[in-house]
Image 1 (cartoon, rainbow, N blue to C red):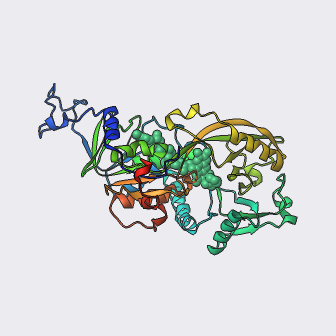
Image 2: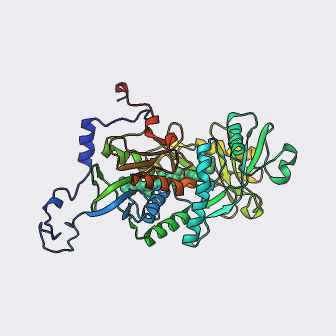
Image 3: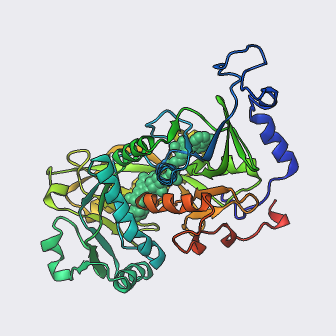
Length: 435
Ligand SMILES: Cc1cc2nc3c(=O)[nH]c(=O)nc-3n(C[C@H](O)[C@H](O)[C@H](O)COP(=O)(O)OP(=O)(O)OC[C@H]3O[C@@H](n4cnc5c(N)ncnc54)[C@H](O)[C@@H]3O)c2cc1C
Ligand SMILES: O=C(O)[C@@H]1CCCC=N1
């Protein structure tokens, strides 16, 4: 159910959460003498169970794309940074896994398009630092009713920001984009800067560079408690870590973590069926044949988008930009396939070169805010806790800049971008009747 407000947690709820959260080192830490030697049962300096807490400038919770880039920027700023991840890396249980994502400047709002200029630079920088290709230019074909609101918003943003585009008139569409049936009345514009990001490879790259910069990644360590304060303390089954600041980039688990800080955001987690469709003739929609990524707006209740066949030879990824609500820990129990039915009908109508039954279905999750804009802000009550959440199914491409601004917030610096669209205060304040 969508929570329409952010609100402090009631006292009894807090007590319940506290009960569920093991705090293995609380109390014991205080018994440590200045020498750091353990007095509980042994005198060893290496006693792991009773080790003193480690101190960091910043702890980042969650090694998805946003947490990894935040940690990377903190390390670049010379900060002692710990990145904690609940699963053993790499994993496929959150939102950042998979082979590919779309990168584009085409957006409905200027503030996203503005951020993209630096994103492209920072992606290129990471490619150099890690010595791997992360971006492949393909262009993005935007399609949708020419007179429709969404199509016009995209078109106008691209025009205002002088994004390099090619407009395809109905008469020339088929010559440039063969094997796609255009709907009558649809406009078609190509954002020629757009392309594919190699997502899993990008996560590996940013983690590797972070480590090279002296950053510490502890995976397989789930944070079970956060104690706000200065320093802020976070607890996992292996210990308690203290830091000057904390960044929470926990994707679909954002509210679970925030419950330790008396804050809940209006986030809805949905499971996405990531569908791949077989080409009847291999290569028809291939990246090597210059088939672009595409985004079709106002063609169904939610957008439909796709990427050329590339990562799985002969298979084209086409997805519905919405899914069914899920608990992130129970993702595989969500078996709704209504989105796949929408996609099958869409494929049959618009992509005659694809078999309209998915050949591969993988799983991923979106964490949606009510307006589908991100949350990039400090915690309203604890300013040294920074939150990056609600990336609403379009956050990957922004990873390098999101990481930069979350790092700036964590260091108490003025952020490089106007973050007003991303503030927590934009959500209606809590009302008693909603609790
Ligand atoms: C199918 C699909 C297609 C998409 N396509 C695009 C696209 O084309 N272009 C684009 O720009 N974006 C796209 N996105 C969106 C993008 O992938 C997400 O916005 C982005 O990955 C979100 O990253 P994140 O770091 O916030 O979350 P996540 O990747 O989920 O990372 C959060 C991490 O926190 C960890 N964590 C949670 N709780 C704890 C805890 N208690 N202790 C320790 N660790 C914890 C989780 O295990 C996880 O690894 C797509 C998303 C999906 C699902
Ligand atoms: O962010 C993206 O580009 C993709 C495609 C459009 C919908 C969401 N994700």
